[in-house]
Image (tube, rainbow, N blue to C red; front, side):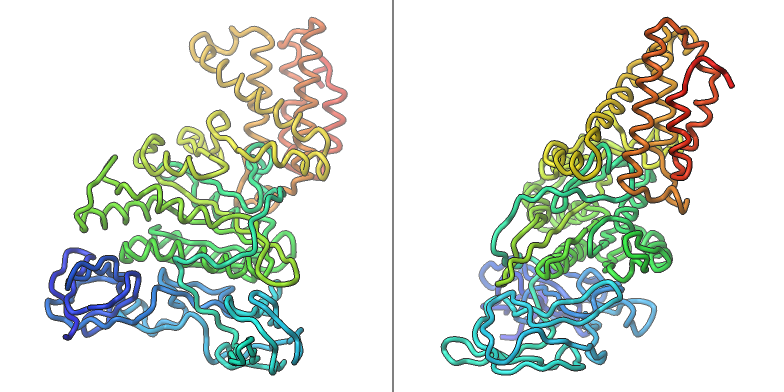
Length: 574
């Protein structure tokens, strides 16, 4: 019986004649071969969700079962490139737009890579062992690993120049069957790549963004979310992490975002230098674009495409950062699909499976001991943006995400309107990793790191309460200590927490410089409080030049001078 379309409801296609098809298999539909995925089988009826526009499809159009789930080709050629939500390399387009069913392989079959073998004939290898590598970019050596499920004796292996689909080795298993090995591993995106074990190793993910690194840190292998309304700076904050984090690989997924934001990424990333190596960050970056004008079903595919690529580099022993902008757009796609399928909606129309869907993504983060005999460890850190309608943080996607992540960085509309970036609300934001990371910060950065961090956050939270009083009685009517707290809070907000993403010096701050800045601010707090305790009036302090000089806090070269000025602080107005 020929497989044909029997009904079309939005992005959901009903087919007949796909007997024996597996749920999850990819199909192609109609004369243009639009891609879709089988999601339900009931008798002779099969439901398919389309990864491409259904406009132009008709009843009785032919459907072809491709016999495999949505998968991604993993190997040399991923870095420095941009891919669609279902893995098609966008720089290989024949025109300006993707055509339905257009076949664009993820990995270039014509480019030759210089493979250097580290194993030899006769060696016994097992799944995950490194056979050799290719220098894919100036920064990254892509390891060619034994695929999962393969082990045995190497019958042959060769160094030299090969395309990704040429055989570089042959491995014989215990039953005598030989497996040809090339540089491609094709992997289903919804299936986790296997590991040896999960680990608990606490080292911070450092981004050079002071408010995150110093006050609400996350560990490598952790998860964090950036919820915020429209235009508050989610994308810029995520891009700062992608640009400057202390990870080996960065994967940026634009999931349902505006096309101009992805265009900005494409235009800006190549010219940005990695502060750790001095090379362009594109040397360690993979971009995945599923913009808002693309079919919504591909939003989920883009998220899992990104995390599967992340697992591939993790398995080599690299630390990987995956930023997803934004998971709200994915959740909106799930809501529309649920409606098309007739699922019972729950809160605000989202499907009851929302938690499981989000959990299946975030749970793929972590630090692991990879497959292989050389005891490698690798990590995936996930940072997502959430876009609650009207900035309502009580909506389901934000609240569900809160239950799954280690750090919550709430972006504040009022701070954004005041041009304070990153606009992180220091009262409501938090990190569950603070205590786990304490040994690292105190041993590697400075013994007083957490003392300074807590002192500064406490003062900021006190200032929020005092501001409520000041809004009624005015600052001039406040007691000396309260007036001083507000003045010191202004210094912290303007010169420590606020950063200019477009200023070469201020866009990235090394964690040791951040520690020095915190130390100076902490000494200012102690000095002002000590002077007030001796009976000196705040009115005698407020005209001191130190307040103006604190604007130099952002400049590394001025920190030593500024520290001395704080130490010498008295009632002298000079």
